[in-house]
Amino acid sequence: GVDTDLFSPQDKIKREPKVLSVVNDWINRDWCCGFNLWCETTGYPNSELPIDVVGDTPGLSDASKSTQDLINKYSSSRVFLNTSLISPVPTSLLEAMSCGCAVVSTNNCMIPEIIENGKNGYMSNNPNELRSYVQKLLDNEELAEQIGKNARETVISNFGLKSFVSRWENLFLACTE
Image 1 (tube, rainbow, N blue to C red):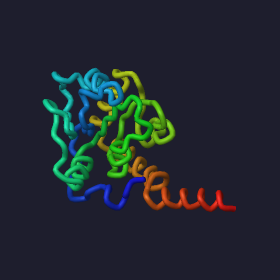
Image 2: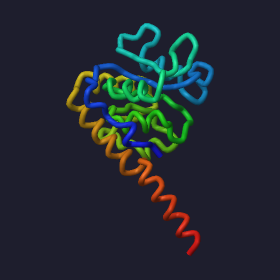
Image 3: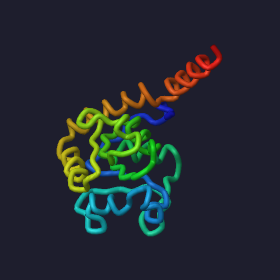
Image 4: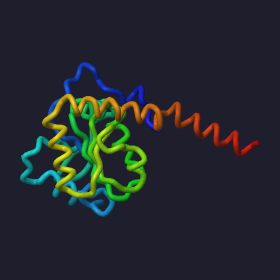
C-alpha cells in the first residue's frame, strides 16, 4: 500500500508542464524498466519534451535526496511517465498517482487494473501513443488536473494503507472462519 497522507499533493508547489520518470539503475535494467521504450517515447537524448528523471542511474539521473524531495518532484510535475515492462505494480506509479500527478503508462501486468484509460491516466505500449498522451496532458492543464485528481482517488480507495490493511485483515478473518 501507499501512505496517501505522506504521498499527497503539495498545495504550495505549482505543477509545471514537465514529465517526470522515477527509476533506479534504469539503463542496466532496460529489460524490465523499459529505458529504450522511454527513449523512443520522449526522443531522448534529443528530446523537446521538458523531462525530469529521478533515480540512481549513472550518466542519466541521481536519486532523490529524501522522501520529501521525491514527493515535491511528483507534486511539481504535470505528467508522470512509466515505461515499466514487467513490474506487476510499480510503486513509483502509485506514489505519483497519490500525489495527484497525471500518469501515462505502459499497459501490462496489473496496470490495466489500476488505470482506466482517459479517466485516471492513459496506457499504451506504443511509443507514439504514449508520447501523444504525454503531449495531450502537457498541453491541457485542466485535463491533467482532473486526471490527477481521479488518480489520487483511485490510490486512496484501492491502494492506500488503510484499505490495504483492511483487505488483508478481512482475508485473514475469512481464513480462520
